[in-house]
Length: 371
Length: 98
Image (cartoon, rainbow over all chains, first blue to last red; front, side, top):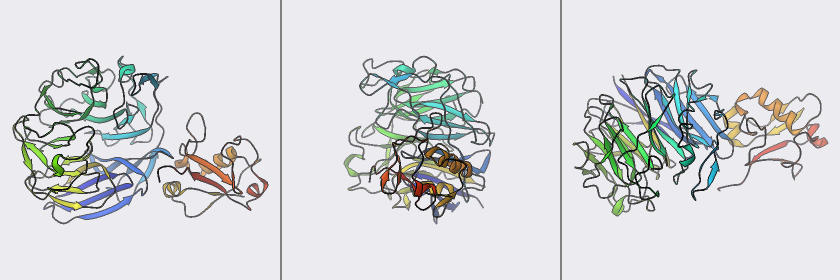
């Protein structure tokens, strides 16, 4: 019997939501690590029982927790993230140099093939890798050191490396994104990097077409077409058909092209989902209506999905790591809100229902499809 | 025997119920007590003192006898009644954010 396991990170703990393939009745487990900020929880594609979780507070710092039994039990495995060499400076909000300081792990990306290898995207922005199941971490410093680092700057949430995409067709190719530096690609397993931001335009930086400085909120890819990338930028929904070499805008008829999440249907590589948010100062849905927008044409033409979602007086946000899809035959779509709701659709967005309604603010949502 | 009281976040992390009781070799100081604490609970390394510098993390405080010891030298002797186990050393998360 197939099923799904939804891994939810919140401001005050982690939750594991499980259901069978119908995705109608849910078992809720948690809070795990009660009281800690859980920025991200994600399972290994190579071993679904192996989960990694990023646990932090401003008081006691960062830890990585690991589970080998699908989230029933956990053990702290590491908390040491040391930049390679002297980290130097990046730009502060006012444009002045600011020392690079480790703050937290935003995103954990397990290897597609090796359950002991996992990547971590951190704030202040850098990429780390562990090859011993999270026990020790080494920075892939070619990213931070590739030359443009002194020009990176923090977004409102901090200068975070929040997206890591591993190319299923080429183990040496990795895409990452940083707020607010932009997107980068490595073709040699993380040793060297190049910015891939051509075509992005951002009014918040002096040179709107600059090589770096863009506030990329999220990138998504369908595993069958790793050259096609979709991006939710601070403003603008973008698409690249050549692995990030060139981007073009596909915001089309969206009510606003500001937002955080973007994801791709598990079986239809041209079907994508976003949640439009009013603006960078109004972090809630337009008109108080929570709407997922779906494009079946890879962008430009969008339809609102509203059935089962609140259509009045809704002023929550959906943060960048808080949407995921399962790979059951009828693709499930999931997202969490800063109001503590986790919504699920078992029919690719046509109908929605809350799995839970009153969790702490949701920071991340990941899904494992279990066979 | 030294008694140490940890904040709830760290008790949860180290799976500790109640106070910790530690035997400390030699002079009881902040450093020697924290060394003994981290030796018994390695997952606490880096959570009270920063890696590398060994400095107290900014939002962590050390109290005992209704006094703030946070800014004492880490090698200063702890008060006699803490060293003897009569009073606990309190490791406290600073009040911040409600």
